[in-house]
Image (tube, rainbow, N blue to C red; front, side, top):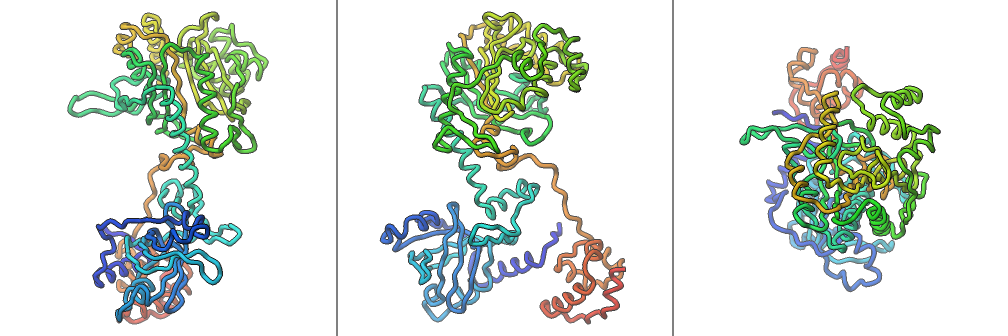
Length: 573
């Protein structure tokens, strides 16, 4: 398969070959033992210079200033950038100066990985630098990095800012925009803080199946797959709830799991089809206890990331220190619409949706209709952490009936900055009631609701063996990280968000150019100049192309005659 290469890519491949001809492996197998990092050197050298008399660092070359027999460069490692000073006679102490004159000055490029051994010093202008005594090529970069220019005041020009490119090429994004690494560092802190909090309570982290014979534990559309050996359909899990409850049946007091969930649904700034959720189940507890636990846990997480429980999210300051406001589902709708839906049947709810211009369809039952009203009229008002409690029974087939309020279940969802980030129940442990609720879900599925839950007979069998009173909680980790890092889209907090298929650049054949009147000998030259199709050529500047052809002819030492300017002009007709 032919690959269309830019002129820069061609030059880098030529440099790669020249390195090999010099006996230098551009991709060595040997370990390179690093002993120092850029940030540590920059932060601590002046206070303790004796610690840096011999250092070994490695990273990408990001800038270069070649000045005859001595040069400066910046290399970037995982912690930041540090300046290096390279003197020809120091890295080439003998007669052979090839490593400096040819390798460093001519064959290395921005983006190449190098290893440096030397010592740290202050230049005459007071800049911390590593005086290079040994230079090793660690990896040759064949694609040029985007050029991002940074002023001394922090102003950035020509930044790599297109979201489509940034999300698709995260490896480039985090190289040229290293500030974004903090989002993912803080993501790790969020998960670690939650894990430490749960472990301190004595709850056990577990793993449950991702491939499941029955999709259950949530109302969502699954991804379907097929197991060839067993010749059976399987689903990527939409939730891990039912398996975690089986472990409570098995006698564990508390189990939790951070796991990937998969829902074959829409994509927007808060939804990705593959996402991370944490679910936890604790025996002998209820949803009231869970509210207090969530407040303590989220305050702990906020402090782990920011040092305080107050987090800036857009224009809002969100305070994660409890206690949080509590509103029942019905009371929240009444508060923000003035309509009491608590006693309405399905027909009445449909009329309310019509009056409020909320789009619904025939497959939706009473629970879905109430959820649509809530989503449209209430959610966006819930900025500070707010518990919405006591949901209609039709909305929650896995939660226990309310102990004092008929027709409701013991459930809460936590909303922050207008979005739901947590969902919790007093878990339904009555196997007979649970079977009846799942049978009602089958009726909804028969009406066309493709998010209705499936019947899981093994889960019901587990409940029949007895599950103690239990409270369960699910938290959307991606949305929580969005809050903790002040990001407005889920794609910013995922290393590799789901993307549409990449549009491949069209590459024309030589015949396409020849049919357009271009001599065959000039086709590879035009390709090296970046023209992969006749259309791209015709969109170019004829005068510039003519002048560049002369330069390329000389550079490539071509023996073909230079075309007349009038002939080149005809290529663009």
